[in-house]
Length: 133
Length: 114
Image 1 (cartoon, each protein chain N blue to C red):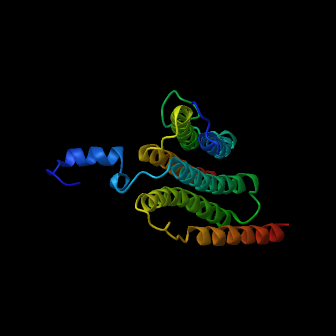
Image 2 (cartoon, rainbow over the protein chains, first blue to last red):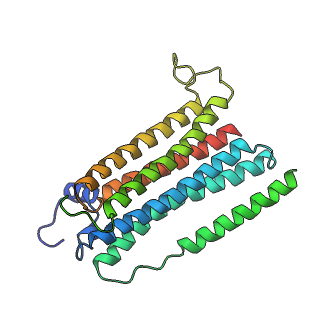
């Protein structure tokens, strides 16, 4: 980061290659890097499961609720899924940055948030299934 | 590889990537189903390509997201077969963007189907 000021073109190219936090501290043990990568993938799969659930409810249960209600519920679920993908990338970066600098792994509210989302969604769909029949 | 990793870390990571690709294909199947079961629209967006209505574009977007993630999984599997280097931020970012793109496609498919 010190030395002669690189041109914006070079900064942009470096950012595209590796973000700045990846050049700080020391490279973590490969086991921790790979575990972090698998945690990222587990979150991505959670996000994909939400997307699959949203599209599946919309298509396979058209009578679960009046169309506008069903649409809003499914779009909300898919939005949470897409947002969770972004969050998992951010979390992956934060975790590795903490490992590189020997800091405690950051606490995150993603788990609490996801617990609440899944619980509320399950409750809402349970009520809808009961009402629909 | 002369000594196998006692925790089989690279193998586990490769399998995690492949599981992720399979999960993405599940979402694909629903989006493609939405296209195939939709009422065929009379006006095509591109002349001479029947079926390429808005739902068809969603199906195409889903296919693109799959191809992108499959390429990432292929590259990463090769890397992990050779050694145990950490993933580059670009690979992780590209796979995140593929999933987010698929999310946008899913929302579009839901909105079009209703």
